Every structure is written in structure tokens, then in C-alpha cells.
Length: 435
Image (cartoon, rainbow, N blue to C red; front, side, top):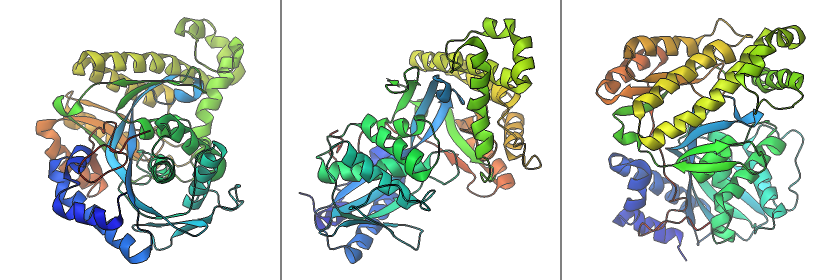
């Protein structure tokens, strides 16, 4: 049994160093040790629990397959080093209490009523209640706990802070009350259910899968109930390029109709072929029926259907390029994906707030700055928020200075891909992933 006092002693004596270096890199070690110590001290002054676990769940970035998952397509995604970190201890009460760094109010829910609550949608409490319900429904152990949490996945950045939070709460239940036996894919299912049903956001499954399973993943959603997940061995750190996202500061408020229209329009066009989803259609089929699609559902659904077909194939070829170590071919396809999202998918500019065009501006300036070296594309859902860039290592510092000058200090976030393991950080550096 690891106690909170044991964690404090281990952090002070270097017993967590190996795991923290693996997760965040050697340069970040002093800051991450202090981050852990801050959590431990806050927990020590607040909770009476003694047995403790330290868990981490990462954010994620989409690498390929922009808006393909909701039509049974293929995506390429990767977990990142930015994460949701929490220390938790079992308690004798009947509820869950969570204090999050940067938030004045704690999250508190009782375990005797885990049904969805009207008016709680869109809150962190709804996600915690949903994850607890998912564990109970699946027959896994749940019990009261206290937790202190620190998240460094920026909200609204397209890096899935909500999925990281859901998986982190799942890992607390998993490690405290289930001996780490719950598999990552099940943590992902529970997290998605919590976000769909309790939080009220109709998200897909990619975010939770990537945050729970980690690494670079090719995910095939042809069977939505049992997606095929394949890990790809590729180290971006040795590629000569720095993967980064640029937060343009755009608001995601009132964008739900924009997001919902994309899968809806693809499906409306697909029904003209007698099928509900776009997966399985060929470009030639669509071109042969282009005039009918225009007449029946309109031009934009036709363009978005073409995007899906080509982007789905591109995500498969991107994964193959990484497997073979062909970074230049991979980057060419990243740029092709970005161009398709701009012209065909049309998720770079919001039709409801068309004067706000941070995404096209960031893409245009990145293209001009890199002058054909590297790659750039929309990040995630689009319409506002972030872009993704691959910048030659020797130009990254200048790029960061240039873009920070336009979008504000800290807008450029360099990313490291996080490999599986260290979901539960244990003294001595042993890998706590037992599920």
C-alpha cells in the first residue's frame, strides 16, 4: 500500500523521477516534481485519507482523418504529454470530492444517486457522475474518494481536455477499487458515455480511445461498437520536425450546429446511395451521381462527401507512411488533408461569425513562414480554436516567436507524443498500468 506520506517522501527523494521523465521529458522534471508535490501537500491539508494513488491521463491530437469517424471512417491520432494529473485517496463518506487547481469550487457528488441530473449538463460534476455510473453499470467497484487534480491540457485547444478528465476519473476508480484491471478501451467507452449522456455533448469515440490507449493510433470505426485500434511505432522526436498546435483564441460558443451539420450532410448525401453512412462509397460513384446529389441535398453535402472519401483513404496512407518511416510523404498528406478541410469540408470559417477568421489566418501565415518546409492543417473539429503545424526543428523557436506575437504569448504549444504506460505513477518508477 502506498500512502500519501510515502508519495511525498518519494517525490522528495527522486523516487518518482523515472516515471516523470518518461511522461514529460528530462527538462521538465523539476517543474513536474513540484507539480506533484503541490498536489500532495494540498491533499495532505484537506483529506483524511491515507492510502493514495497518483494517476495521469493525457490529452490527444488528431493527425489525420478530419471528421471521418462519425461516418464509420478511419482516423489517425496520438496522445500528447499534456495531461490531467490527480492524487486520490479512499474515504469513509458516501461521496466524491474533487478539488481542481485553478477552480475555486470543489466537485462533490453522492454515490447513492448516479442518474443524470437536469441542469447539470455541461459541468465537470456531470462527467464525474457519468463515469461513476458507467463503472457501476459495468459491474466494477466504486467507492467514495477525495482527489486533488491539476490539468495542463488547455481547455478549448482541440486537445480533448474533457476526455483526459473523464479517463483520469476512470483511472482513479480503476486503480483505487479495481486493482487496475479495467482495460483502457473500457475506460474509453465509459468516458464517452459520460460525455454523451451526462455532459450532453454528442462527441465521437476517437478522443476517449486515444486518451485511454495512448501512443500513435490508427483507429478504424467501420464497426462503431468494436473499433479496430492499431498502435504505430513512430517517434516524432527523431523526425527533424516539431509537432505543435497554435491556439488562435477563437470562441467555440454556439458552434454546435456547425459541427453537427458535417456528419448530417454527409449522411444525407449517402442516403441517395441507399446507405446511412459514407463509408464504402467510392469517388467514382459520387462523381457519377454528382448532379443528383446537388439537386437533392445541395452543393456543400456533395463537397463534404468527396472530402470524406479522400480523407478516409488519406488517413490509411498516412499511417502506412509512418510505419515505413517516410516523414516527407506523411507531411505531403498532412498538407493535402488541410487543403481538403479548407476547400471541401469547409470547417475553417464559421458561417455564424465569419468576421472571426483566426484559423485561416494562422494557416496562411504558417504556410508563408515555412515556405514549403513542414506541414499545416486544421486541428480537430474546426471553425475556431487551433491549427496543427510541423515545423523544422531549426526554425521552431523563430516560428514560436512569430505566431506568439500575433495570437499572444503561449499560443504555440509544442507537443510530445505520449506512449502507453504510467497511467498510475508509483514510487520507484514502476509502471502502474495493470489494466
